[in-house]
Length: 181
Image 1 (tube, rainbow, N blue to C red):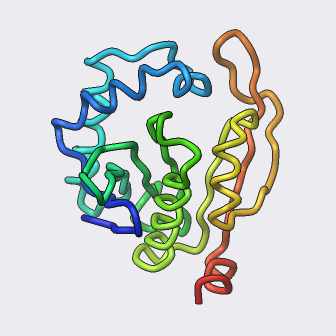
Image 2: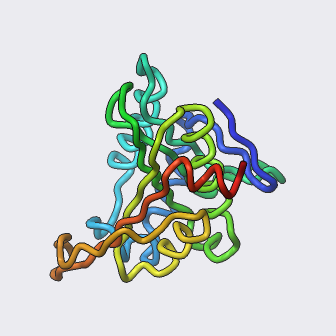
């Protein structure tokens, strides 16, 4: 499966992607909003293997794709949409990008493409996502793709010695079609 945008090619993961992922997942800026305090080769290899296994599922319900630059093919992150079951009427999106590519609109571009894939190809009714409330950049991405803030869960995540609030976002198919009809 391949999804293209103006500047990105979202493609299936391959086993050899792990070193690039390990590099950006080891960056302190990346780790700030994750439970992890560091990443090992074994953990990242398992992370990639999870995506490889998802590609083989029949029927497939999880579409996490490697985000690469159209110019040069450099892997810079990933983005995807997941349904809980083949019959599910909603899907959640998630993304992560190497910190050196933050602030350039790549996450928004990839997320927008996966939202479109959810509504157009998967025929789902609702797309949702969440982020740590302090992660202003991630919240901005969700808002830029047209999602609405649906709620704030207070202190519902515990990691790195403190409680974190999370923000819940969602978009209905009708809202998406109104803006992308």
